[in-house]
Length: 522
Image (cartoon, rainbow, N blue to C red):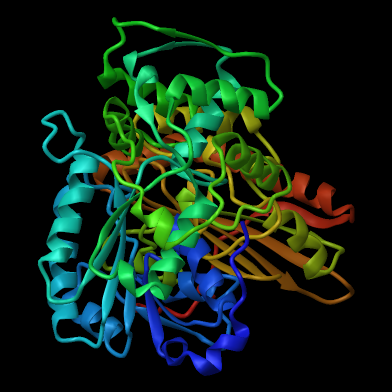
């Protein structure tokens, strides 16, 4: 299925000169939709809570793209974002937030969108929700919230087109990652009865075609459509299809009644990189039959629907070639702690503790940057691998991300990217990489790598960990691991120098970090 280019249509289609707003542009769907809209000639405005995160995307410099800072929970910024746009894609949800009551946040956001759009130039809103029968008393909290958001959006004055999808198959989607890791790692599965639940998956490529089609087919305005692929399968059948596509031995699935659905999120979060809160929200819906009840959209927006095997083959190929355009880990709020921009001066909110080491290498900044930008994921952390894995597993057990989360691309980092149990705050090649810890900690932590050119073809590589403890527990945590941090940092710097392949001139040695950053609170 190919979406035709419309470069020649731009001059004859005035709608393409007016901006289309994409909300949730750095999420899984939005991250793929934005470049497609630009390719098709549309003028696009993207809204996000972090401008640096938006501006780091590969499509951020496109001449027909405008990035604005805004939050669906902030009505004033939302009103500014929608002004001047003729259509808006509502692709936001709160499942990736730290709060357990994501449905409340989604409800507030939807009502804000209704208010903001009421006095705007919007002619239509396109919302991607979930399949499910609202009258079903056993409907999961996640699916019920998706349907509630659709109902709230429709209560406004701007017509809403709702697309309802079940499982989306594509490289980087949370549902596909759960399937991939479970099948890759478990040749025998003792599974709850939900493995026999009917589901109608759809390929991400087909979802994108439907989303774009809703801009180009006026008969979709104000309508609700079920979207799905050509097959209705059970999760057990999907497991076997994936195993065949991945070249694995046939997986044995044994449905057992004694495994409560409540336990499914726990073992899914332990086997896959998906954290327990998100796994819980997704797996609760596995008990609900999610199939299309009407196929009207196939007639309005015709396309070749990919089978599950075709979608899985395509996803596996993209993963193997490191061509994953967007990932479920991309979504989420990027909120750097203000003390991370205040150098080493005493911080008003508490004392910032630091552990810093440096090494001088006879190499250029670009040569040293090469192993730095590849850190984490399959490359690892260069030293103390078992210690990093243990820390990851401990974090996983208490509901946080682990090393399994990895990274989207093995050689490229963008602001906002997930990096194992870190989040990228800043990438300034080839001089600085700043990471924010997303581990469950009694405080806040950042990890910084800086490269400073010197004379005679030498550069100094600095590695600094900063920690703002939360009470006495935070202090105990920091000092109990201080010796391990010293061991790890010295070993990491030696190994990085070895990866560079150039001699160490001096170090690694400990140092007291100085104030070399200007305090900036945005």
